[in-house]
Image (cartoon, rainbow over all chains, first blue to last red; front, side, top):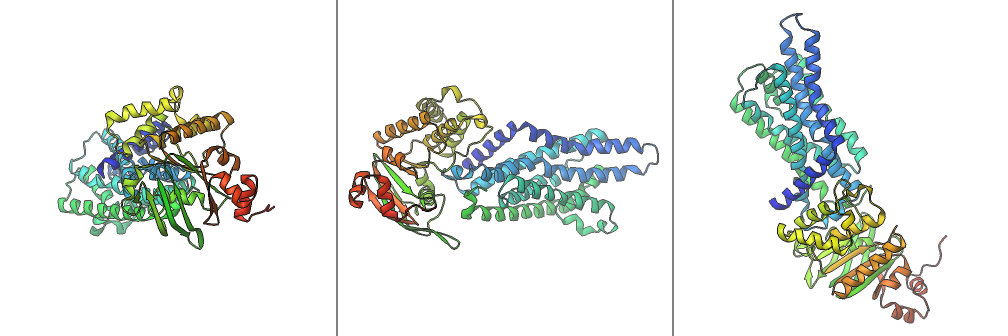
Length: 250
Length: 242
């Protein structure tokens, strides 16, 4: 099981690594946050000392988004693209289960998501001149796993790259919209938001970047909730992949 | 050896296979002949374990596919419908990926990849990305992928589509060599001349049924006609539809 999964993940990593245009695009998106925030901070410099919390809140939205855009192209190309170029059928002729195919691709997408997220956080750390507390890693680790699972699921449902592109771009609105809502809405501060996947990560990111302490039980619960949601998305994707018509192209 | 018994497959309201039974022996090329939509591709996809049969049975080298499909997939290689290559990978990378999935150990795999490259005469293109390949080069790469685990049974679904004359001749030569080495080859086509030139036995499919089976000469004799084309028309009951 593990062997087949790793072989598939390895192939997707090599294949995506060759796709330099997609890599560049993901890197630009990941670094967009630090770039925009540094420009905003230049623009409002010296006006008043209250600006930093808002900047940090903005950063956290960009960080959430970076986890989603990091693996987007890989999910699109390796699953919807696989159907479109009709390479899924030859792949399934190997002694490999569809679940192994799915999990292998998920691992590859998650690796690129994590790379996007790391690039983004490193950019912000550099910008703020501050190393985020190590606990933040705990709260962030499940995020690329969830983003990858959702992207893999969306891509499995789509019949081609173009369709996947449409829906995956909409999926990015989830962290963006939720993030913006959390920054600007007065109702967003309620404690239970801390336990919600994506929203919870955003609040923890803000708290961590502001130099506050993270609540450990809360972080662990959030990790678990995010992992469960990722698991559900993977189950839905696996179910889709078992159907006969996936072996037919567009 | 591949045996198919009373195979059935339904897609929604459409019955793709109603009752398909035939036997493809070792050391022979068996041609699946049928009009578009007769069930050739569905039959081949079911044999290679990608589609689950709705009824009936597939046996490969005597073992039922229903038992352990993944184990039987190691005994089958296929070039189905379309090359389906990875444009950013080279043939060498594709063969290695395929061999790993078939569970070939690294040390053996390195030799095996070289063997396949040499067998198909692919040395000059083995390290070029397949994105810019011609149809013939794509077909060779897909065939190499199907041969990497040295399968005893080989399925080919209209492999000559879009190939030029030299490539078709090269493919024919390769298949004859594989057959003479004892492989069981099932070859589907709707090009009658192709089937006549290449196949030792012919299975004619129409609307999800096997309507005739035998050598090309037997089929002509039974239908009381001179050419395989006339025999095909006689068995499938399809005259020209324009």
